[in-house]
Every structure is written in C-alpha cells, then in structure tokens.
Length: 358
Ligand SMILES: C[S@@+](CC[C@H](N)C(=O)[O-])C[C@H]1O[C@@H](n2cnc3c(N)ncnc32)[C@H](O)[C@@H]1O
Image (cartoon, rainbow, N blue to C red; front, side):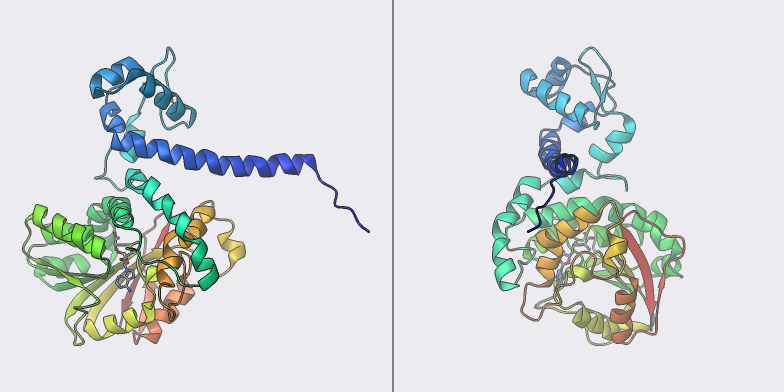
C-alpha cells in the first residue's frame, strides 16, 4: 500500500490561492459599496483625505468610512499617504470613478452581490446541462453588462476601433444602415447614432431587461436614428439590408450563434462588413491556462456565458473562451461569408476583433 506524502509547503501554497480568491471576492463587494455610496467619485481629484474629511464630503459615517478606506488601501486601490490619509490617484479615478473612458472598470462591480447570487442557482445546470438565460435572475446581469461594456462602446469603439475597420468611418459618415446584433442596452449604437447622424441604426437582442435599459437610454439620448428590436419576435430581415453589422462580445453567449451568423449572412449587403468582438482565446486549454485572466474567464463562463449558451437543449454551450479565432472562422465561413480577418492594429487585453465579408 502506498501512502500519499503531504507536502506542508504545497498545502500552504494552495490555501494561499484559495484565500486569495476570497480576498478578491470580498474586495469586489467593497468596491461595489464604494461605487454605490459615491465614495470613489467623492475622492476623485481631492488628493489625500482622512476618513473625517471623506465623511464631510459624503455625509456618511466616519467610523465605517475609516474601515472602508483602510481595506481599499490594503488592496492597493487607494494609495496610503500616512497619517491616516488615503488618495484615489488620477489613474485609479479613471478605473473606479469615471464611466466615460475605456479604462473604466467600475461598471463590472455595479451588481456584484446580485450577480454572485447566481451561483446559488447554478447547481441545477451541473445536473441537467441546461443553463440560465441572461434574464433568469432579474435585471442585475443586464445592468452589469451595460456598465461593464458601455465605457468602451461609447468611447474607444468610435475613436480607436472603427477607424481601423476598412471603410467603416466613410460609410457611416455618408449614411448607411447598421445592425448591432446582441446589442444589450444599446450603448454602442446610441453613441454611433450621435456621431453619425446620417446613418440608421438597428439593435437586436432577446434580453427583456437589456431591451428595457436600451429603451431608457434611447429616450435619454433623444436620437431618432435608432430602432431597437426584440430578436425573438422581430428578427433580422432575410434580405440584404445592412452595410455594417456589429456583434460585440455576444456570439459566444448565444445558444445558437450559428443560426445568428446565418441570419446575418442574409441581412448583410453584398459589400457589407461584419465587425465582431469576442474573447481572445486559444483552442488549447494549455494556452488559455497561461492567461492571467483565465480563472475569471472560466468562472464567468459558468456564471453567465456558457450558462446562456446552453439555456436551450440545442444550445452549443460555447462558453466565454468558446470562440477562439479558428472556431470563429468556422462559424463565419459556414454561414456563407467568404473571409474573416483580424482588424489590423486593434488590440485589447481581453478581446479579439475581426472583420468578415462575403
Ligand atoms: C455580454 S452581452 C454584450 C451586450 C452588448 N453587445 C454590449 O457590448 O454591451 C451579450 C448579449 O448577448 C445577448 N444574447 C444572448 N443570447 C442571445 C440570443 N440568442 N439572441 C439575441 N441576443 C442574445 C444577451 O442578451 C446580451 O445582451
């Protein structure tokens, strides 16, 4: 009989990793509170502050703020400046206090408690194989997605991405018809509609909560060149209509992205361009494993992406890293497109960008 030798150093290392995850989860909760309570916004541009000064700025309780400030400094989100003073440096403010720049990350924390609550419902899918839709747990996921992707969609999409997509800006300026399939709360097309008033924009999604947010954003923006469609009841037209089609971080979430790609093939004009953003990944786990974001990608997959992609028995269950470039090419070419290429020079820490043509 062999006995397993336990190496105490490895036990310690594994416990360190496990508690590191717990540190992340708890810190995510305190970031959520910081955003809800307006603390990052109150600290932005203020220089080093004591808890009493922050209490003065926010009307909140000094003792609770002191505990929060110390935790945030320990997590290195705030910079500790000595004498019980804490600073949100301008770089951190871009990440935590401003949702109108591409480095903004705060939206990802906007619904942390509700979205983490999804885990309570995810034992079932491990037995049945059938996941939850984006809407199954209420509006929290739609809020998180909107606020997580909105900053990039409202800023860098127009200033950095589209100038690199062949002819996109000239077409948009001249006036074309554009579809955003899996548009979520429509941040991208509303921003595009403002920037390119001669073009006409159509958003498609099947999440009731995302569509409700889209309708609200649309009313606030006051643009008249955007129409939002529920893709389940009002799908893409089956005749060539759109000169540009967008799919921003959504194909891997769909139960049948193959059917969505086939519908896009029918709806795009002969010289149209399909611009796709999806997660940068590899077909090989051994390569994905090297990605520092991998634990989050596989975890979010269970929480949202693979869950949504397997919400029907015929769902492809792709998962967050389910569309690496070769699979994306297969999906797009099988739908009848002639070519798929990377958008030259467009890079992002998490996403790959493609343009497809007939
Ligand atoms: C990660 S979100 C991205 C949303 C948006 N493109 C953005 O950048 O904010 C994925 C979107 O795909 C939508 N989606 C998932 N399955 C879908 C389906 N079968 N048909 C239409 N939309 C779908 C979800 O409702 C969700 O809004």
